[in-house]
Length: 195
Image (tube, rainbow, N blue to C red; front, side):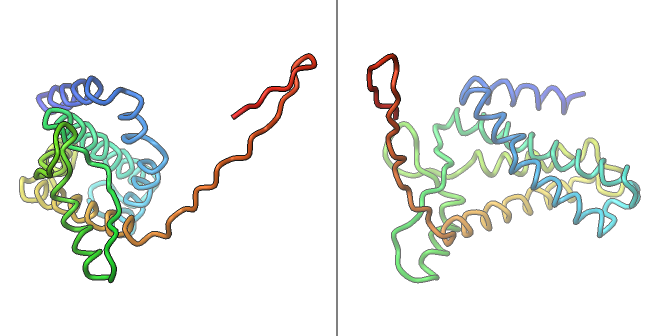
């Protein structure tokens, strides 16, 4: 019950800070659903936790668990980021060479720009989101994975995934942005441009 109250407070704070649409997109958008499906598939192959079994019901439980943990992470993260004025968006470096770019991507996971003034700050929202969601998800886990150590390990794995995502964003091919051509529309004899 206490975990549900904490999650509800985090969600309401995050919605007030960033808007419910952005939070909904980040928490249960396509990427979140795909990531939860992949994580549930890996858990299904490893049969972890074994109490949930290997059948379709076990997959559904794993999927729900991973999605719930992701929603908790995003909610806590957005709430704390709004309070601390942290900008969690990743910005690519303009560095040359592989190792300087990897170093920048790892560092950018833990040091983020401030939204209200110049400079960088420690990404407490990212740390608290991952560790808080790892601990909060132990509430619905079976007894074999419900310990504090497992919650901290889950939070650490989440931080590692954030590091990996930033490294992937750094090296992913850049999209060329071409402006869309303007279309001409005719309305009752008048020509108008539509952007």
